[in-house]
Length: 222
Image (tube, rainbow, N blue to C red; front, side):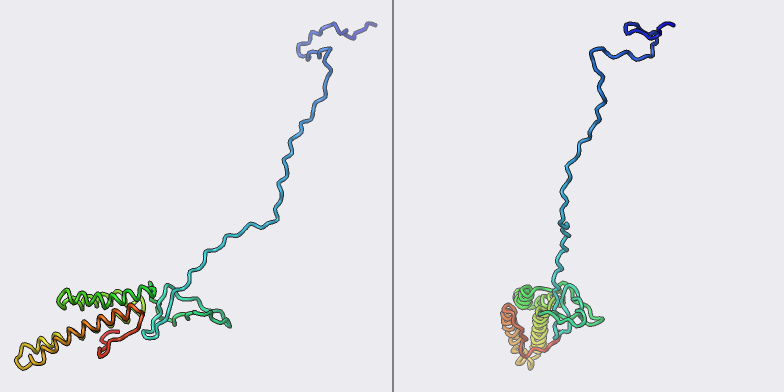
């Protein structure tokens, strides 16, 4: 029986066999790869802040009992049952009554009330009495719905122009007759002086924020 165990110095003829390890290198065991552990993030107990809603603008509305109208940007919301209204609360307009939009501030109302008298007087003087009525009418039509104070003074300025025009035109008609001249000429003078004085007083009153109606002046418009 022969010994078939190959000796170390013998080489095998199998090309697929792995080469033998070097004699001076000891075989090492495979090292297990350790994945790096990420540091745990601290958990916050705080609740993220919620976005704060934009404040609701105050309702700019007011009620004028003289004209029975509400002036403001929007109708104030109704109060819950049993809740007392806060100071300065304006009740909502009745059903079917519209709220007048784009109201003026008190300062703007005083300014336009002054312009209604002063501007009309300037137009009357510069045009010889022909454009005063037009100026008062334009201001009244454009600004009457924007506040009770400016409506009051612009209506007064228009009423003054109407009464002044009646006196002047009536005086001119009477002046063409011999008998009527005795009455016609004083009517023209009275009409001109009346318009001048009342518009000056009205401009001062409006600038001071006073509610004032010209005496002896019919309310043709309100």
